[in-house]
Structures are given as structure tokens and as C-alpha cells.
Length: 252
Image (tube, rainbow, N blue to C red; front, side):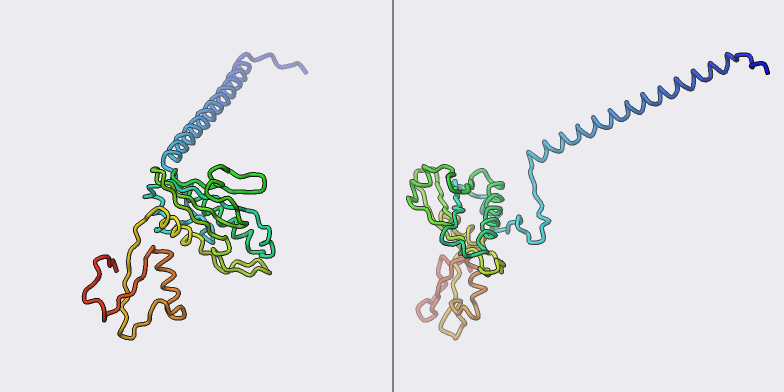
């Protein structure tokens, strides 16, 4: 058999197909580079917007990072500087298995406070590590284990301080470590309100006509705790035999 003669048209077609394949590959790489560049630019723009206008959404089942309206309002309108230290030492309290969980939740809560305003600073004290030690020991010479220390500074040299034991913030089973309830936010918010000189709303409750007083913890304890801790309300008595008009400082 004799070989077929070489066809130059077939060679030209093969070269054309090869050139077309290379062109398509080049275009594909160009498109990929453009898409990656656009995506990076979009991520940079979104990151800049998020840095200027940060927002956090709490999707956790226990809503550990969600703040109440009262806390949001307090932090938004905070006029004085607030600094908090949490002593993580647990000597003498290590028999309470719920305490480490309460310490973690309190730290997360205070960290969330510090994200909302630059006027709030949060420090965790551990063995061998005491942030801003000079300021802390200037106001508290002796530190107790598992205790929160709150200091407010109005900027005019006037400071107020308060310490709160971590065990006041929760109810739990010390043997099993189960936390039954955590009320850290309202207690800390109320403490900051008091130290920063926040105005309380005054609620007067009448007495003299067989009313159930809020001091009756069995029937009114839940309501009283909610009003004082969550709403910043101070409850006062209004004996109808002594008062002929509503006091001028009455809000509710």
C-alpha cells in the first residue's frame, strides 16, 4: 500500500484547532482571575463596612451573647469610664462545680459589654497576671477569689467602686455542676447604673387598703426582683394615711 500524500489543508486545520484550544484556556484563566479579583475586592469592602458599622447576631440556643434593652441603653449612654476586673482564682471555692461555668459566662458577658462601647474595659485576673495592677490594688488591697471588682471614673477625679461575688450571679447544683439560672446581666447592669450615678425611676406602692406588698417574697418576689434588677426601679412605700397627694418624685 502506498501512503496517502500529505494534505496541507489538514495540517492547517489541526493548527487552527490547537490555537483555538489555547485561546479558550487563556480566556478561562482570565475569567478566573477577574472573578477572584472581584471576590477579593468585595470581601475587602464588606470588611471595611463591618469594621465601621459592627453588628453581632446571637444564634446560640442559650442567647449567651444577646443583651437586654436595658443593658444596650446603659452602654449606649454611658458617660463615665467603667473598668471591671474578674478574679478567676477559686481557692476555697473549688468545691462548687458550677463556678467555672459561671466564670466563663460572666467573662463572655463582660467581653460583650466591652464590644459595645469604648468606655467599658474588662480584665481577667489570673495567678501571676493582674492587668492594670496599680489601679486595681489602689482601690482594693486584698483580692477575694471568684469576685468581680467594678470601678467607675467620671473624669473629675471622683471614683466609685463595688465588688460582687460570682456566686451571687447564679443558682446551680455545686455537686453536679448544673446551672439552674444565671442572672449576671441584670445584677451587673444595676451595679454599673448605681456607680455611674444613673437616675433610678421611683415606684410608689400604696399601703393601707390590704394590698399585697412587694416585700412579700412568696407572692411578689419575682415581680420585685424583675423591676429592681432589670428595670432599675426603686420601690418606696406610700402610706395613704400619711400622704394626701402623689409624691413629686414618683414615676410609676
